[in-house]
Image 1 (cartoon, rainbow, N blue to C red):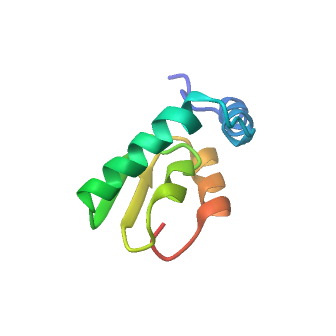
Image 2: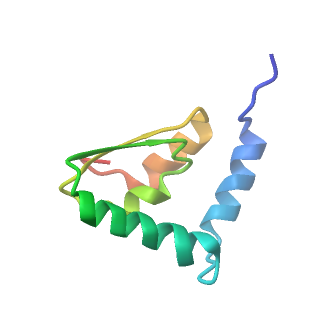
Image 3: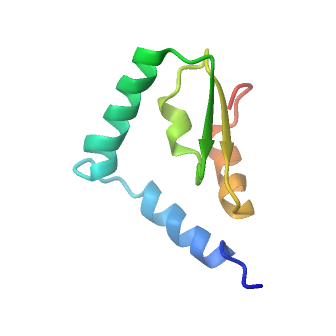
Length: 88
């Protein structure tokens, strides 16, 4: 079986996501929508399936128990490097 999330693909994703793009859809539409949604619902726990390197965790208040899940060991390792804290 071919590995779906190989290290090369994961590193390309990391480069793309971590390159600043203030005019991009993620920054202009997706993140503001998710912030508003979280603010409205005020969840105590939040699961992020397909979290990549965890950039969404940056939008979550420290009072929320955030769990990111991704099939790529490379992306999970990067998430831990960038966003490691007691609740993330």
